[in-house]
Amino acid sequence: MSAPFTPAGSWTALVTTFDKHGKFDGAAFKRLCEFQIAQGTSGLVPAGTTGESPTLSWEEHNEVIEVAVKTAQSKVGVLAGTGSNCTDEAVAATRHAREAGASAALLVDCYYNGPSSLELRTEYYEAILSWVPEIPVVPYVIPGRSGTALSAEDLALLHLKNPRRVPAVKQATGDLDRMRRERSLAGAGLAILSGDDDLTLAMMQDEGIRCSGVISVMTNLVPGPIAQMVAAQQAGDAAKAGEIGKKLAPLFRLVGCRVTSTRTLPDGRTAPVEDKFRNPTPVKTMMAGLGMNVGPLRRPLGKMTAPAVQICREALKEVHASAPEFLKPVGEFFGVSIEQRLADDGIWAELTR
Image (cartoon, rainbow, N blue to C red; front, side):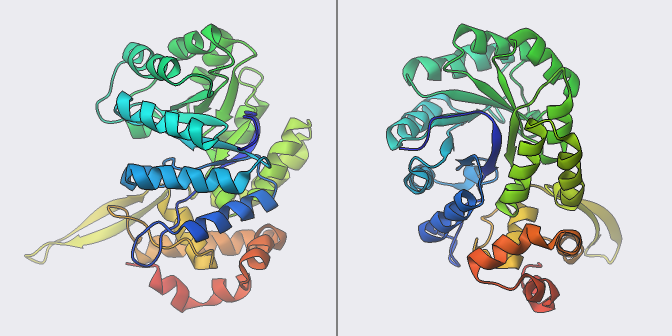
């Protein structure tokens, strides 16, 4: 059983580890969870978007959550990703997470089929709350991925009807005005967790939002510094939080990576194309480059182009140059030399398509 759900601090949206054959690597995933716990993360978030959940079978999905819960024990919380674009699937996954001992369930808005906010509230969130009692539920609003969004009004209804069951929201709209409306409608009891690393401090410092923490992608790489940044801001030390955030900025900018490439048509013509490599491709590439044993991405995600890999490598070099203590725990925990791996062209060439 993991620790009770406390929607504050720095939570890690875990990548999923695969072996060289593309199968879930439970031992490597356990090791990754142990690294997070040792570095002071507030909680683990398995089987979310960063964990390539759309490509996991439900058997794998359940196993990922079980490994996270068993590793967490009562040390940290586990916010299990159980969302789907099918309510029945989300009910089954949320029920499994509860039985496995997860602290709470993270439910993404239904992607692709695009229900209205009313339908999301009544036919998805309220249905799951009714059919899977006891476990807290955290809506995850990310219209850029899902193509739909639970409205601030319907979120407030869910929270105010049952604050214990809907204690928080993961906010990844990038819309600060919307977040202020959520706070205004739902009141002080709703915890707003940032779903965008680069907006976390702005969301925490805004009196109209009062974000309580982050569900972070880059904590996969640097859990300690991000936890320290959030803790400093929670303690009212905006200067310290800002200083840490400034040093982490090269990583925060790379949750997604855009580069321009050239396509050559069969007749020899060429055309420029912007390739947008989305989360978790950049962070998993950087983790692999540093020797964290995460394995490959699962199709349809794949390797990035050479310019994109170089951007990721240079960001790591920049962070390591300004704050070598940030990446030091990776070297110590995984038994690698950060300096050697950053300097080894061969390692980064292998990560390039």
